Amino acid sequence: MPRSPRVGVLLAATVLLLATATGCDGGVGPGSSEAAPATDTGASANAGSGDTARLAAAAQKLGWKPCPAPTRSEDSSAGRPPGRDWECATLRAPLDYAHPDADTIGIAMIRAKATDQSHRIGSLIFNFGGPGGSGITTLPAFADDYRTLRSRYDLVSFDPRGVGRSSGVTCLDDRQLDAYYAADATPAGQDEERSLVARIDQYASACQKNSGKILAHVGTTNAARDMDLMRHVLGDAKLHYFGISYGTELGGVYAHLFPKNVGRALLDAVVDPATDPVQSALAQAGGFQLALGNYMAACVKTSDNCPTEQQITGLLDRLGKNPVPGGSGRDLTQSLATSGIAQSLYSKDYWDYLTEGVEDAENGDGKILLALGDAMNGRGQDGKYTSLQASLNAITCADFAQRYTAAEIEGKVPEFRKASPVFGEFMAWSLLQCTGWPVKGEWQTPDVSAKGSAPVLVVGNTGDPATPYEGARKMVRELGPGVGVEMTYRGEGHGAYDSGNACVKNAVDAYLLEGTVPEAHKICS
Image (cartoon, rainbow, N blue to C red; front, side, top):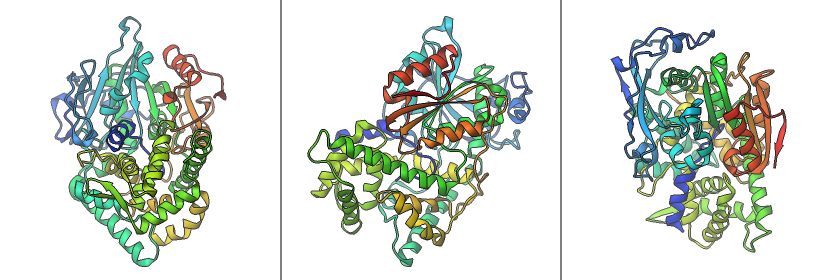
């Protein structure tokens, strides 16, 4: 089940899972000559760039090499290198920017060079969200969508610190994670609440045991500093950026820290930076409910076996008491089914799977919904989990200072049920994810004010389930006057650029390739 406030998408993994249902060294280590701190080269002169500017790393050379096959922590469903167009390297960054001469962490990077080198603009750095999504595997998987942009940009992505090859956070082992995600996540009564809290405490303790050294250093502020160091080492005077979902929050924090370094930046599927975890979770519950309603309205126009909301809630209630077989000796539980239904709403391409999956589950076959739920949780066909959810949890808890008790959440459940009879209760109890976490969070809400920044294009999708449309307008407001430029896509699914809408794509391409900023409040449908 998605957590609040930010959610990643595992589209490629889901496709592979549903088909069956139906190079870069990271790591934490001591400082090395490859990553020796250097004095400011002058590329970053604005106030606030201090630590990173001093780490401009003029001496650091990225040793680009052919990419190895993905590791299990990146994408356990993919076993092949991304192809000869792609190169991988490792950026060395301070583990703790307050102590830049101490330990470093390896930030795994990937790139494909611009096809028209004579008109090359620079590097275009992608973050696909999560937090916890691996850029090393995601960018090559969806590179065709960015073919036009590659004409003039080197396409670059990375595994943020604590993700995948960049010292990906590990907590429970695969067998323990199977049990963890299958367990009841919507307790009824004190005994079940205590059981849920105990499982969350066990999870946090395992994260501390297995990844304790990096947990205090995986937050969004450090990731933004890593991106500015990356910009220096890549040789770019400005950071050109493409952020999706959580990547929009990362982009906003970068713009706040380094406003003078912002080049052409796109924020797509926008996180609302002004809301706390409760407000975000409540909005997200409503977003998924809206997307479910849109799915059902579209389904009845083309199919005779469309589920109703009552059928779905009834199915989930029954699965809470009596799971059904999901294949390979595993059961489809209420928790896994809810995650699967949510995953199916990220793209209209999955709607047929939702129709078939609900019908099959009602008839005792949970394979399709289980495959969708596994994709949400980062589980591959081989039973191994990526670092997605562990990284997501760690970054969220390093960012947000709020820590909620079971009693506080219990009091909020009625409001969440009202927002979404299907997803509300799950979203409410997911707010316990940082309770008992071993490190403190940095903020109540992130500061994304970016006075002095170049224009940032902010695209909201009216039918987005995971990052509700209102977040785009809030991001524009928080970036500040003259910075955020709002554009609306009247569509479905998570995000706009990859939807296939020509209006969105043409406007974004013109902005990123030619610097043509769309008129404010442009609407595409």
